[in-house]
Image (cartoon, rainbow, N blue to C red; front, side):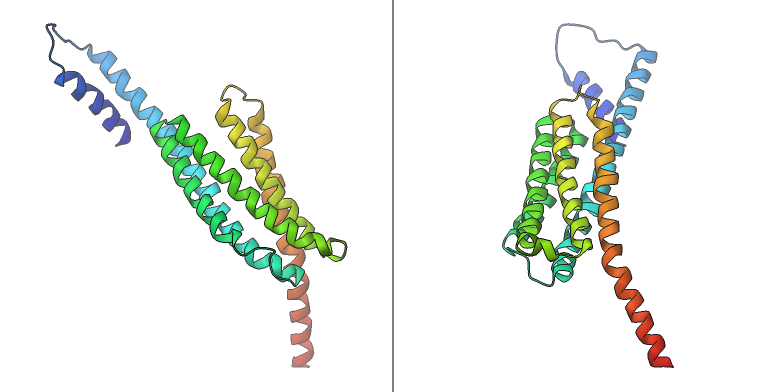
Length: 212
């Protein structure tokens, strides 16, 4: 639909032109141009879908989880609750701008979305680190995993912005993917597991004792 709309917009615009010239079309070339429009739109949709899933669904879910899980792990409130609405606003706005920029091939909008996401992740990381620093020496291992996860998330957003600013620098793409997957996702899974597994095992043991 998107590709046919792009092709239709082009040829309707050509038909609307009034000039002292005769317009003719070569059917094979018209077919190729339509295929190019459809292929480009599919690539843009796939890239936009990927960013919606990773930055939108996964990113917002992780941010919401960290805002609740991290204070529980440390046993103390976050350093600043005022940063949370700003962080979530910039996160959501950044995802929307990123997707619009990718679909419309508007590089400036895509970069603005990347900047908003980078600031959002930096605010999240700042909030968690400042919360943890006074008691970092006594913090459980789960807290370190979660701190590293947010740090790698900010690094991922920074590398993504670099790739957006310098599209020809393809060497950063594998680094970008590995930092996002191994750095952020793996660390947040390990942090959640390091906190939840002992709790679940303790609950299971107390339940068995209660039954006996």
